Image 1 (cartoon, rainbow, N blue to C red):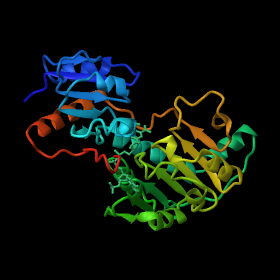
Image 2 (cartoon, rainbow, N blue to C red; image 1 turned 180 degrees about the horizontal axis):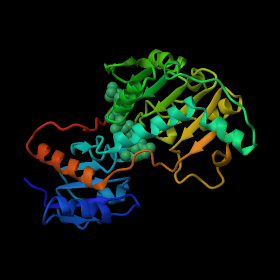
Image 3 (cartoon, rainbow, N blue to C red; image 1 turned 120 degrees about the horizontal axis):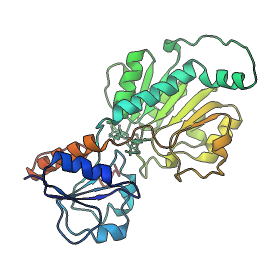
Image 4 (tube, rainbow, N blue to C red; image 1 turned 180 degrees about the vertical axis):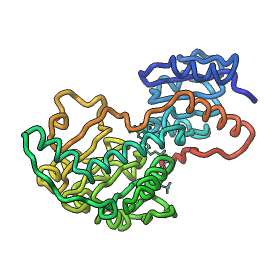
Length: 309
Ligand code: NAP
Ligand code: GLV
């Protein structure tokens, strides 16, 4: 059955690009942006409140407008019985590859060191680091972490990947479990976090875990701010154990103007732009997955409420 009516909650963002994407894809589709009692086929949401969901009425599926579903964690129980589906890739994996590659290359080519030297007019050369001598850990090997690990390995970095279930990715040494995390991090000069935020991964990167990285390493957080214990990260940067952190995400966004991260000399900040949802690609994926659900077929990205992703 084709989609007739969709409701979008953009979590304070602009609904217009989503409306345009659905309308271009499904002629005649009605796109609502506030619950009004009319039955919708599915809801496409980012951070809906409980009140918004309570007013929604029955839908046959709920799609996240992005890859992450942590914004739905508080309402997953209320949604039991309704399939909740996350976006898989839809143009985000390429963006993540670019971000992770930028961070890896910046470390390998000492971009942060040379930028600091330029600010103090200092002409000083440092030894070359070969790609083969710069191991990179990719934490989370899913729709985004998988392509990131493969791209970094294809480029010539030794890559160590970590996931919940042990994965097999050509050219990547794969690990699982806490000991596996320790092993993956213990030689990594760059670690890229691409885990979902769940009960099992919240505050995972504390003093102990970040301390497993070798002295002088770079931590890159492209997933969620709440994965990291900020005070522990700051302490390791200030002790010089970690040389740099690339932070795209923060526990509270937008990052407060008073946050000490803004001016920290060993931190690079971006405003949660590592991989942005592309409405046209995401809408096409939702419509296709909805048709499969409707036909009783399996879909990828189905959220397991017990695992939280
Ligand atoms: P995904 O396909 O669900 O992959 C998640 C990966 O993490 C899987 O490999 C999974 O293991 C692993 N994992 C989950 N829980 C774990 C645990 N407790 N221990 C070890 N590994 C664990 O997710 P995705 O599409 O790649 O997205 C990842 C995250 O990126 C999203 O949840 C979101 O927070 C973030 N994100 C950020 C941006 C941004 O702009 N900054 C944009 C998009 C997404 P298995 O392979 O065993 O399942
Ligand atoms: C963005 O952070 C997403 O989860 O898609």
